[in-house]
Image (cartoon, rainbow, N blue to C red; front, side, top):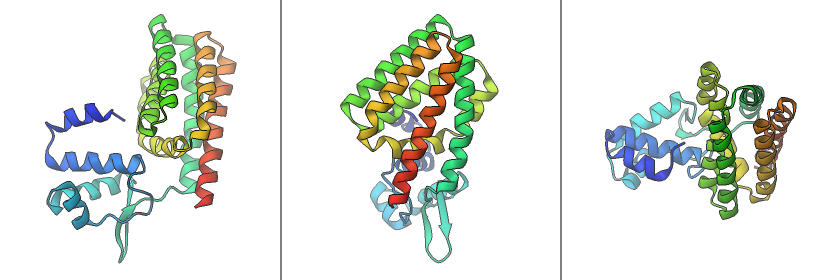
Length: 224
């Protein structure tokens, strides 16, 4: 996801319906609009100071993306994060992240290595500050360097297609600050493995990284 400043700058040039859609989408992905929360058109229109038409259009678009569900006799609500959906997404992501790490070990340039170390450091800084959105975005940026260094366009496209669902799950994990130290350690381990070209370690750390997230998010979902 883009930073708040970049998003605000881009929205100056977007049609109103796209601006409303982007705002609601971001609020869902970051948990400001919580799973199961009803999306009442009048309330949202008043809050965003727009008519109900762009709200209705945004909800329809978000439904197509699987972020909103239309419930008979209840209306629109933020889609729940189910255990099955979580497992399905992370099962795919586990394999693809490991492939990206393996390919990055083989194909990473000196510039990629510098960018990976820098993004790892940026993530640590964000984690120390403790602001969830900044941490999530720094985490996305870190993994984007690895994906880009893989040099595989098809792999990049598939991972980007999963990005929004993964962001939502990632944000659930990041909200718990007890995970920060472990995340920092795993990022450091993954960085050093890829920079040194150690494919076996990079794949193992990548798998562990996803497995820990899945376990933590499942525990949160079951508490609900």
